[in-house]
Structure formats: structure tokens, C-alpha cells
Image (cartoon, rainbow, N blue to C red; front, side):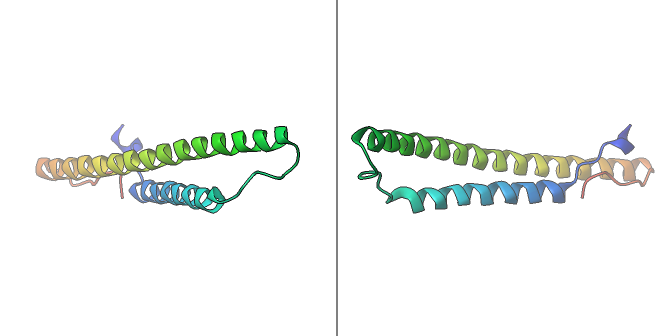
Length: 105
């Protein structure tokens, strides 16, 4: 069964970096749109609807950014835990005389 369990630490690291870049992209987008105004687009109703949309979009983008950052952190901790368990397992196997390594990178 152990030969089927493999965790790719490099792939987890890559995924973590992608999530962090996504968070940074969302933050950059929010900063870029921060100064955009919605007044004067048309009728008062349209201006009001656009303002409401911008407020909702900012809230949603901020939440997504926070959750993406949290997920990247969780993945990093998981990757580190897998590596720690893999090293401990490898050492235990060596001590037992079975010199096969673990499944993570």
C-alpha cells in the first residue's frame, strides 16, 4: 500500500506559488480600480447600480483574496508535514533494514 502513496512536494509548492500570485493579482486589480468613478455614466439609477456593483465586487474580491492566501498557507503547512512524515518514515525504514525511500520530493 505504501508504494501507492506519493505526495509531490514540488507540485504543492508550485500550486502554493500560483495561489499567492492570484492573491497579488486580485490586490493589484482592486488598487487599479479603486480610483475609478461611476458617476456620470448615465441616469442616476445606473450610477447607483454601478456604485453598488463596485462595492459588492470589492467585498467579493477581498474575500476571495483572503481565502486564497489562507489556502496557500494551509497547502504549505501540509507540504511541510508530508515531507516531515516522509523523512521520519524513511529513517525508520533504514533503521529496520529496509532501505527503500518515501514517496515525496
